[in-house]
Length: 640
Image 1 (tube, rainbow, N blue to C red):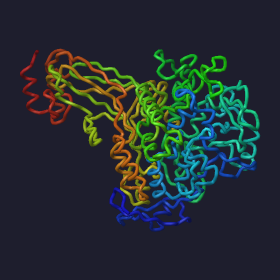
Image 2 (image 1 turned 90 degrees about the vertical axis):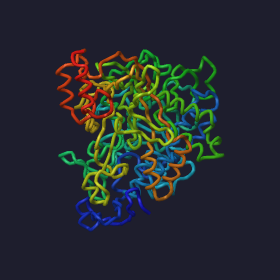
Image 3 (image 1 turned 90 degrees about the horizontal axis):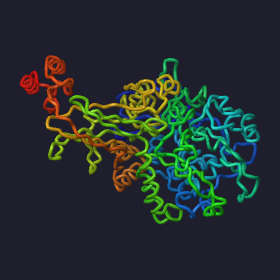
Image 4 (image 1 turned 60 degrees about the vertical axis):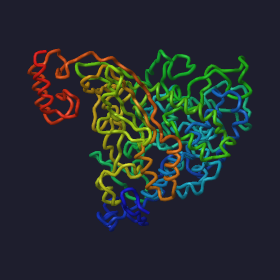
């Protein structure tokens, strides 16, 4: 089997290797040998704190499948019933996601046993039951594929033996811990956890359920009473899985990420000392949202929110609704609430839920993925994307300025870095409405983005030279998420409250790009071509690029990549979503007035000569190169 680099993949078992130095010294990863080498990690390399599979001193009651919850929490109100919106979310289908299946297979090919870390987040019920000892999907039961289930989330407890605010996490209240749950873990030495993230969750081993309301009149579930849990309204709960760190790496004093000694847990267990594949929670934590919050007069995120001030992850992604939390209370105004959290978890994935439904075939409706629910989920995700940004257009001399404003509580875009991107498309039109120039063109039939003249917002993660040598992959290899240890580029727009120092403290700094403290927007200037009288700008977002889907297709050895690719093609090749679109009428300008001061003079000549042979300023005729034609146009316009 060969990967996309044309190299066969050889697997070696060498548990005694200790880090990259010994890895290479032992004869593996010799440059030029042709074979990609699998890093021979063990389960110990991916050990993290929190509840462990079946190891609690109290008997652990299994996580139940969510269909059990549908009898009371579904089928009564399409926008309020928790099951109806959860089941078509990517939380609910996290373990059936075909893109994840392919990425999981490649992770295990690259670094043995690394898939266990992925399963810990995507199929927590299976992980807690000990069904992921092989670090792949082979041991998961049908119930385990329920993903992040109702029963799992509502048994989670505060993972710190004391208020989270005492260890630096802002909260919406006093998140009183559960000492009877935490004490056995502390005694076993697997708490306290130095940091949240990477599914270092704590789950009550008993079937005792928790939620954000302290006035539930009756517990229909049997067993102990329901427990009021402010933790379930706090962003720190979401941070459990929405900061993703790779514990196989440690950060050196110089900031380099190096492979640990293999066969043992991370030496510090601090998330900041690991490679941060995703930093969504930390991005939010360093914004203004968790402290003062942000008010949106247009009510774009909060649903029926009482104040309209968005602070927590839940405020935006679980917007308040009028209704009942279960079938017994919905429809009766005396028992309905104005603030039932919608369990839609709307995000930025626009096509995979349709692919999951296709894969499930005739079983889809049985498991709750009806066509109407799927359509509603996609519509919510598209609306979330459109709410997440604003655009402003202006003309500055001979340039069109496009301003993109981040209205979300984290980077725009955020989350999974592979294949996700946003970009600006600009069309310049003449007086008849014909397009005379385009920047950021996208071919919807082939899913091809013209990248040379396109502003793309994305994160590019690669491998270091040491990892390239150890694995015999080319330097700068990307998309191998279990191996990535370098942020090569990151120009994603930060949120309100951004500071360079704050983002640096959580390893979320822009790379190869810069934003000033407090800046949550970005400007891009486009030279206006001759003859243009108007322009239309569109900000597009795409969940899965063609390049990434082709990588999965060509690299996953077990066929899962081909399956994901075929579903991607079947469902429109992850057609981009137009997050914002605006048009502007352009004032007549002299194309040779490069600085826009109203006169063609020596300043413009200097600008043209300083950019001779390049593009941009000085390109009077808009043909992409500054040359004698542009000089002739300038001289002909001199003084005008």
